[in-house]
Image 1 (cartoon, one colour):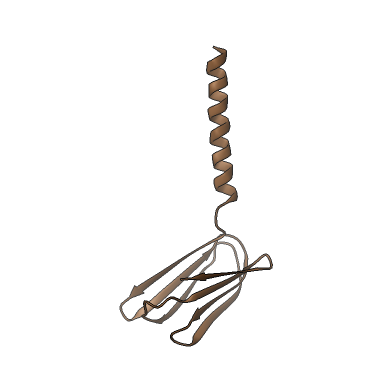
Image 2 (cartoon, helix red, strand yellow):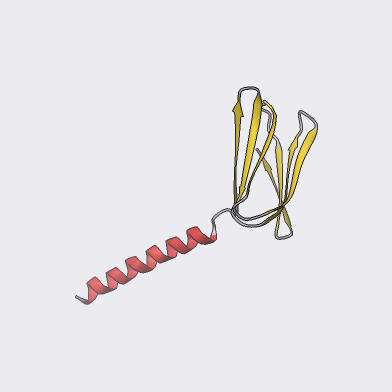
Length: 101
């Protein structure tokens, strides 16, 4: 009887630990890049407040910039269709992160 209770306690504790890890390591934003016809659509959704994002499209030599994106807000940038990667700069909590998208 005591072993079953101990086993149930260990399982519950492990499940709680997994849920907490998933909660703490969830990205504060998601993005998607897709091509529709003759245009590329880059979508960015903030899961928490983001100070600034900038999408630099190197092959077209221009960039999009948006500041003070609120939690739950979705931003879309549309430009000429291309498979070339762009650079995404994100400033959150005073830190800059760079991604090739």
